[in-house]
Image (cartoon, rainbow, N blue to C red; front, side, top):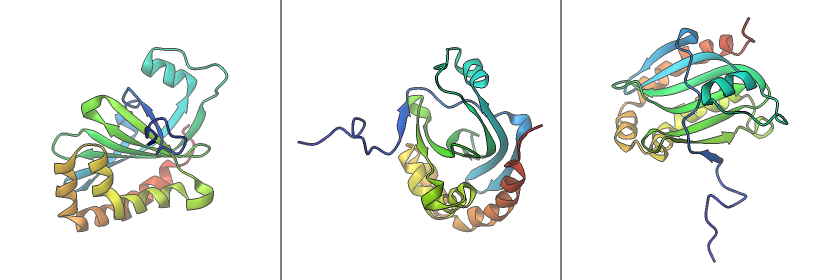
Amino acid sequence: MAIDREESPYRRGNRYDRLPIPMVTEHCIPVDAGAVKLVVESRKLTNEIIEGAFHDVVDAEILFDDFGATLHVCGTADGVEHLRFDCFENEPHYHYIEQANGANTVVRIDELAVGDPIDFSLACIGHHLPDMLRHCGVGALADEVADQPDKVNTAVAEVRELMRKARLPMA
């Protein structure tokens, strides 16, 4: 008997039938990477921010108070976000964003196993970006990225420095 992937305790992450909290554009620095734009943001996440974005109450038992560098992966042609890496101080994670379904899957980054969340995120961008984009349902964009790996790899060096700066707590 096969187990439904969404019901399995070993599923890839937690799927939510909503898109993630939008980026704060005034905190963002875009870097051209060909078919995708890599956008670095210094980000903070609190219960108040979540409640303001989703207009519903966050479980009072759970305290969100985290910060760090975020990397948004957007299509260059349309600016739509498909992947997000939140390299937060306490709870680093990433999002597979399914724009067509208005959903996203959040996957915890195990920094004990993979090391620095920024290095992990940039390794994903450098080595697995087309596959990760396909998982988000944007195969044509994935194919474009696969055809121009040098553009992504060139952007990663600039993004690495920006993310190191963005990881500091916001004033």
